[in-house]
Every structure is written in C-alpha cells, then in structure tokens.
Image 1: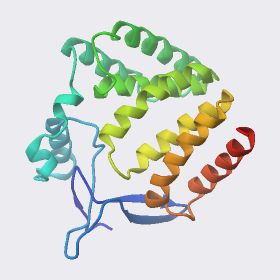
Image 2 (image 1 turned 30 degrees about the horizontal axis):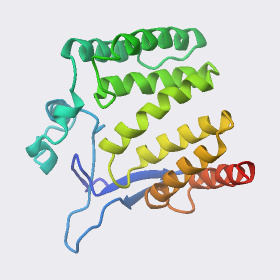
Image 3 (image 1 turned 90 degrees about the horizontal axis):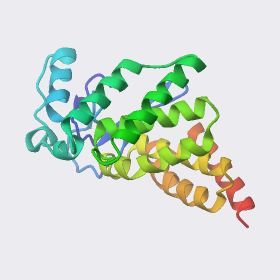
Image 4 (image 1 turned 120 degrees about the horizontal axis):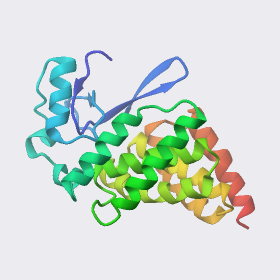
Length: 226
C-alpha cells in the first residue's frame, strides 16, 4: 500500500474493515493505468493542497486536478471576508469533546450561518465545514430536527465535490438518512439510503459492517413507509 502515489482526483480509496486495510477502485481503471489514492483531505483549494503535500510529504503534486485548478473558484465562492471568518471559526473550534464545548460550537455556527446566508453559497468549502460542524453539534446535543436541516444542505455540495463513487459522500448520505428516520421521514430516508447503497457497495463492499448497518436501516424504512 505504501507504493501508491497521490492524486487529488484518485481512482482508488483505502477503506478499513476491522484491522484490515482494503484498496477499492472508485473509477473505471484501464489496463496499465496507475492506481492512485489521495494523501490529502481533498476539500481544499489547490494552493492549500500543494502546501500541505509539500510540508507533509516533500513533493509537489502534478495531477490533472492541480494543473487545471478544478473547482477552486467554487471552493472559495462568495464574500472573501465572510469565508475567512468561517475558516477561522472552524479552525478555532477544533474537535469539541464536552457537551459545553458542543454548545459553544453550535452558537458560533448558528451565528455565522445566519450572517452568511446571503454572502456565501453552501458550496463554499468553509460554509460547508460550518454546516458539517453545526450538524455534528446538534447530533451530540440531541437536536435531531435542526441537525437534519444542516445535513440536507450538505448533500448537494458533497455530490459536487465527491463525484461518482466516494466513501465520504456515501457516509454523509447515511448520516442524513438516519436523521430523516429519526423525524419519521421514512420514504425520504429510504430514498437517501438507496443512493448511499449504490455508492457504498462499490466503495466499501457487500461484507463491510457499514453496509450491513445501512441494509438494516433500509429494511426498517421499507416496513415503516408502507
């Protein structure tokens, strides 16, 4: 696995199954084509990805996505001052651990999301990170209806940035489906789960515990939606 090179638009992903590390293809791969994974969190503009790779791995990425700077404009769309504030807030919050820290994080998110409603599109990556953080905070605080309102807004940006078969998109859809289920939105949850299943059977495989969990929830939704 250590021989795999980096691409910011990789044709493979690494997925853990218990103690095992699995390499799974997420694109059509031609005979003789190199297998690649992403060393980075790809939800960063090209200069940031390059900076991180240079600092962490001592090389400059020359993949097609870095050459073309694909989606950079979308990542930083909207008011610059607003997304810089959002970026600073997300970095400052870090990883909350206590209920009090989650409550503080939610207050920050609510304020910025309200202020940025006309300044930043949800595709702006720092707006998207705010939505993710707000959803996590609400889940940890048991505010599932509010969590769903944020989660729904993340689905289109996730589809845009994690195109085709991508495990992060599938996991996000499954999280939203669980929230829909919690609000007795069984037919909507079923539709979300079906979309997540189509991705996850490729990215995780039929034997993965996450897919087994998805199937159980899907069966519950099928029973309750009739």
